[in-house]
Length: 271
Image (cartoon, rainbow, N blue to C red; front, side, top):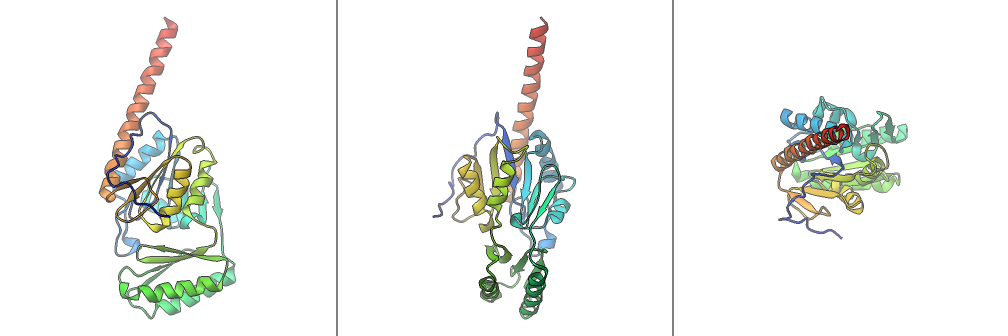
């Protein structure tokens, strides 16, 4: 049962705690663009992410429908843990890559079928991700029903596949893969384990991530309108950017306070 994220809830202060950060990209860190390849994360935000990665001692991951190589390009110079294609591929904190894959014959059959079908609908775009396929119709919303019916037909034919609707896109992905499972896996590993998870996302694809974070008594933040399982809300990408800068300043202040405290304790001991 979905709930409406608290419209007027004041986002909690992150001062004084140990947090693990998880960020969706499109619609959260990067504004939605007409085409996926036009998206970008502003340089100032990338610098803030780099600072948060350092301040959290590496407990920061990007969790997106995009492949990991695209996340690295968008977030550069940040090279952090990441879950791409909704968790079908995941890079842990040690740099090890974990990847699910479809049987080669099935992947080829899906690719051929999807290319042929979507060629009929001008303005739609097929994005091939190796183990998943994204069917975009942002520039041709009149074909939404056609695209959805095509995706539903293919998923019904193959039980190893699942459907993932999003904003003007529907994805075909391996069964059992979602952002919630990816976040749970990260939270069982260093340096995430034992920290309070914070997850910010904007889409239907992020709802299982919100549920996973809520179950861990973390902070879930929905970006934009719509019902959600998230406990807090930001109204747009610019608000996300501003909040990240605020978090960075809080953590820097905590770090400075800790260093001063340690120095005082060391001096007291010598005296």
